[in-house]
Amino acid sequence: MDAIVTVAAARDVGPGTVAIEFETPDGFEAEPGQFVKLSAEVDGESYARFYTLSSPGVGDTFEVTVGIDPEEAGPFSQHLDSLAAGDDVEISGPFGQSYYDGESRVVVLAGGPGVGPAVGIAEAAVADGNEAAVVYLDDAPAHEERLSALRDDGASVVVTGDESDLADAVADALTGDEGEQLFVYGFADFVSRATDAVEAAGGDADAAKVENFG
Image (tube, rainbow, N blue to C red; front, side, top):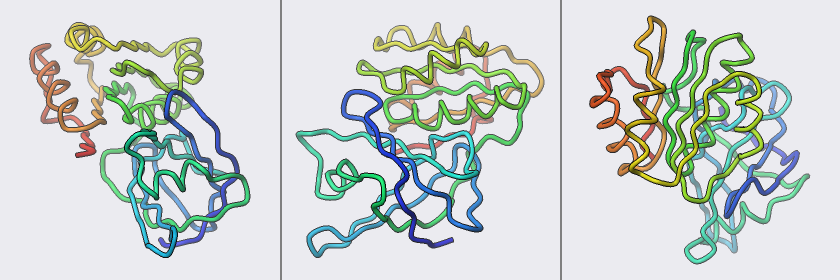
């Protein structure tokens, strides 16, 4: 669907990272792990970017998490960083097939901005009474409060800034149990490393739900 959505809240959730919460428009339905296109006009120019949902649901509001590099941020990133409650943005979507679908155990491998869908999927799984494991690679992690809350709720959460830790963390997270679903979210280099780690651990990377951010 296409709609104008209103910002309900915006807050910093880590270094160079902002979570933007929008009021859910009538008729909008999406699953954790799907993505939307945000559009706006900035200084007379039209911009659009895709962002994956970072909320476990879309009931009254839904959320996306945006990474902002202060040295490289363009006009649209700066615009998103400046949003406050009451501002409007255009959305289209949802898009994507790599989403949580009620699986009995989810294992989410996240690199950088992949933490957004990771926390959303894990929270949705835990809320459903299912198992969740998150392996998150980032030397400046975001959403630490939500990751800590997931640990408290029984999820397995590993956060590391060291790429050499990834293989062991992935091997520990994968059980091979029936009903386990693997998700991978991140940029191309991370996706490649993560899927290699899955194969090295005896897992099936081809069965993973993968979202490559490019």
